[in-house]
Length: 316
Image (cartoon, rainbow, N blue to C red; front, top):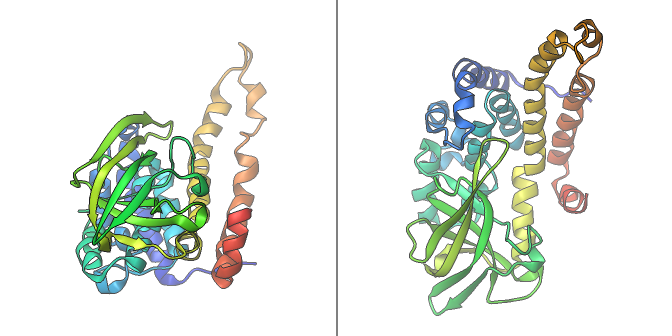
C-alpha cells in the first residue's frame, strides 16, 4: 500500500530537513556529553515544530501523529539528542495535558510548550517495577482538597530541564492497574528533587526523580477514574509513541549508512588489501530500504482503527 503525502506535509518535512542538515548535524557531537540542545529547540519552535501536538486554540498546529513521525525522522537523521528533546514536546505528556488538564493549566502550559519555554517530562519507570504499572509503588493520597505524592521514578528524560512533570502514580494505594492515575508536578514543588544521573549511549542524561510528601492542589490529579485505560489510550490512540520511536530508530540507522559504507570501503582487513571489504555491503544496507514502508503502513492502519491498536500495542 503506497502512502501519499500532501504538498503541505512535503514542504514542512523539507523545511525541517534543511535546518537539520544545515545546522543541527554539524554540531550534533557537542550534545553527546548530555548538554541539552536549547539552540536547536528554539530554532524548531520558530518553525512551529514544538507545537505539533498542541491544539490550535493554544497556539499549536494540532497535527496528527503521521506528521509528528515524519518530522522526528528528519531530526533524528541529523541529531538524535535533539529528536529526543522534541519528543518531550510532541509526545504523550503534551497530549495528556491537552486532553485531561483543567483549562487554566492548559492555557498556562501549552503556549509555553509551543514557544519552547516549558519542557515536559513524563515519569513512568520505577527502580523496582520498571514500567510494570501494576507493581508501581509511587502513591498519591487525596487529603481533603490537597494531594500528597510520595515515591521514586528513575531513568527520566529531560528531568533537569523540565518545568512540569507528568507522573504516573497509584491513587490512594488502590492495588493493580485500576489504581493508576496521573498527576502534574511542577519543578519548584517542595519535596521534589533530582537524584542520580545516568548517561546513555545516545547522548542523553537521564535522572532519578524523588517525591517526598509533595503537596499538590487537587486539580493536579488529571486522571483518576479508569486511569490505566485512559492513559493507555493517550499512548496509543493519540501519540502512537511506538510508531514514532520506530521512525527515529529507522532514521538513526539510515543516517549511519553512508558513514558505514565509506568506512567499510576504505579500511584494511587484518592487514590485507581494502579490496576484501569493498565487495561487502554494510549490514545496515540490507534492511534500511524495506524498513520505511512497513512503518508507514503501521501508522496508516493504526489511524484507521485506533481501538484495535490499543490491544495490538498493549500485548504485541
